Length: 319
Ligand code: NDP
Ligand code: OXD
Image (cartoon, rainbow, N blue to C red):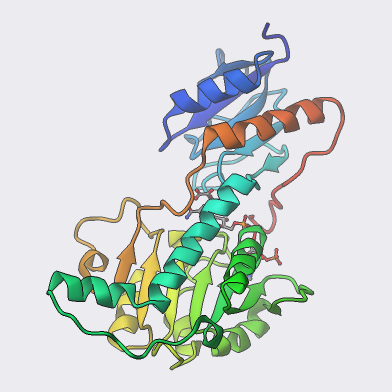
């Protein structure tokens, strides 16, 4: 019996059908609509979105909150979207966090254990053991963006024996990890990091941060040779021309990129064929409706009972 109000579901880049099914299963007492019945539908009280078309959230007089189906919310603030002044909730969920940490650990281990080199050798039928094989304990991983995902990746990398340090916007106290904050802390953080794992959100302050001036501050040599960059945050954080130049100049030894300035990565991008670039198609952590929808609906119910929403986005900071 649908009597609790309507959820507007507006997702692009994902199959709306499976999100609608999951919402209807978790919220049988709410109606799920893919577009408003009328321009200012007063029955819509929640919106669940991913890259919603411009204007789709305008003029809904009783909208109480917007839920992003991902951890990142830059898609909400994209050009042309003047968002209604209601709370925005993002995903903080074990399922997504575990997937992201799996990606970070996978890429770190791949570089530690010479994955790119051995795949290239296999393609050429070359049998040669690279004896430059540091132990995990000799390698420092710098987590750029020491937030929800960064802290979980750090915990798992520490269990594998790595030394881990973290960088964030605001200062942190952390027993297991040396932390650095703000622009003043960046050079000290980079001077120690053999592998940088970027898990930053895309905001006006972080856009283009992975650029030539950033690479110039990286530790020039370490146990793996030149430093390594892994970016699973957002493509807008990186300047791809500068990454290619840094690879050529050997300021960067190798990179793993899950996200790109333009997605899908255009076929003509030289990143595709660069021998020291590992590409995944924004697949570090997929949002799974069965895991993410029930807690979203729990939050809607709790909010309707007068409880505070959790995992809110700070609009001013942009994440
Ligand atoms: P959080 O908000 O929990 O953490 C973000 C971290 O970045 C915080 O430590 C924050 O600092 C730091 N930060 C933000 N702005 C700055 C800045 N200007 N300077 C220094 N540090 C900064 O987010 P999550 O960990 O949950 O998610 C991070 C991002 O991961 C998402 O925004 C999304 O873009 C990306 N992501 C990518 C996925 C993929 O499949 N590739 C999947 C899921 C997420 P502070 O702690 O001080 O606030
Ligand atoms: C996210 C993503 O932000 O999948 O959750 O990119």
